[in-house]
Image (cartoon, rainbow, N blue to C red; front, side):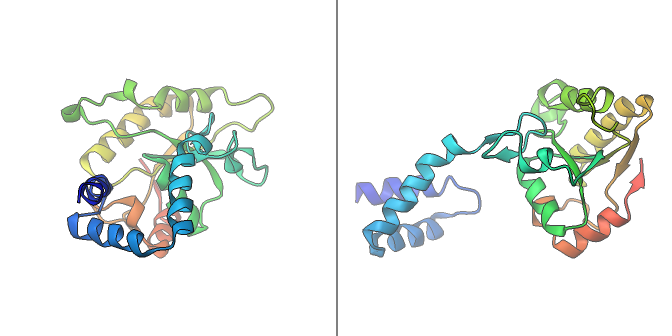
Length: 200
């Protein structure tokens, strides 16, 4: 069946979905009522149009600036630099962090051809050095990249770049396992990591 094979082929392109899982989803959709399938298709179709990047932090949002950047209740002198927008959601779930965010959009990885100019590092430096008019100066940048070779390389690069401006550059403590992925860390591990962060 060509239609089913094409759907399975598309589903297997999603992260964590193999052929068996894709087939299970496809068969479920065939059995589901038409309204569910239509709602799902409409949501997928509208996702790219309604979700965009925040012009300040680079995280996913439906309104610009995002709710975190526009909140006056956040600690505005504290910025947490993360690799991807989904890391913001993971850290927010810990309820331990109350500052702002900055999404780098990746990690420095020379083997993959990703250098500092390919990331949102210039924007971070601009936020630290200038900030917005009438806003409190940034006093600390928490580097919350994954504890991998690329994550450590990016953290050390940010430290060298930001420290001359007088801002404290800290790194999440070792509550997150080396080689682990921030997206899959549990709330308790993240909470301990924030409480035990150290200066680079």
